[in-house]
Amino acid sequence: MTRPSRVVIDKQALKHNLQRVREYAPKSKVMAIIKADAYGHGLARVAQTLNNADAFGVACLEEAEELRAANVKNTIVLLEGPHKSIDLSRIAELHLDVVVHNESQLEMLEQATLDKALQVWIKIDTGMHRLGFPIDKADEVLKRIKNCTNVKQTPKLMTHFATANEQANLLTKNQLKRFNLFCEELDYEKTMANSAAVINFPETHADWIRPGLMLYGVSPMKEGSASDHGLKPVMTLESEIISVQHLSKGDSVGYGATWCCPEDMPVGVIAAGYGDGFPRHAKSGTPILVNDVRCSLIGRASMDMLTVDLRNQPDAKIGDKVVLWGESLPIEEIAQYADTIPYELMCGVHKRLGFVERG
Ligand SMILES: *Cc1c(COP(=O)(O)O)cnc(C)c1O
Image (cartoon, rainbow, N blue to C red; front, side):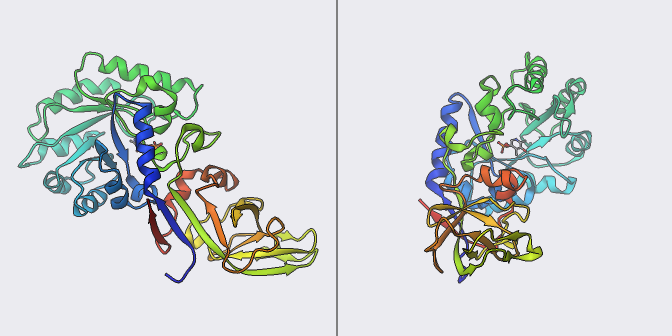
């Protein structure tokens, strides 16, 4: 890699965050959510670092294949369940657990001929209205699961919250109430909580929690950042200054000439852009660390380059270190400047970047 831009993954921070998660929910098992290439951090890398997680949750069979190929032995749950009936034999071979969330998956399971019974997690829709059986169908689903020889006779039960990051939103309490009412008499393991619920709603912890975002050291709340919850950022996006310009008052910077110098000033060029996953919609004023000092993005992000106001770092020179998010610069803040959420920024880091592990 000759390009100076890179992603640094702090494995120590990752382990610390899992520990922190366990402190939040000491009685629950942890299904670490590592879909979407572990939120951009590298699927196998994260699974191997968090090898004491009680299970991993992934979105699809390809991700599970990658984990098994990397010799990951933990329980793996396919969060969207099987997509096609021909996948089922492979799912059994790889010892994967499956979520079952709709009629068509139920039929697939009923009609399959498998060597081995699968562990299923029945997903109930309590108000998110995305995946899951409606509550009034759930009894019938349970009955059919009981009669299905392709699945183990102790299903687990799950639901997912729509608004757990908003402490005052009544929907979470309602979802919890509906789920509990349905589960009351059922002696099966249950799971509800994503990261936001782990932090905001201890009453939802149940047998299993399903944290994603917080493992990566990012706050799931609308306000504040990870350190408020004792979490440490895992991903740092770094680059370097590759040019410094001394511009005059009134000079415009970059495509569209959208930003003009209010005075004579130094402007730095950074070797990273939207082709690396930096959000093109980041506004002028988005903080960027140059030599650990806060400076501001100016003008439009280009594919491979960004321009930065160096008035706070007038002596900055070619080769100086730049941090775009991560350690000392919360990704939550960058997401706000780009009208998006940290999830999207992390998932969007491009594989053209070199990944470096630390810790
Ligand atoms: C992605 C996902 C999670 C994790 O959500 P976070 O907000 O990242 O903690 C939990 N459960 C399911 C079903 C998911 O799809």
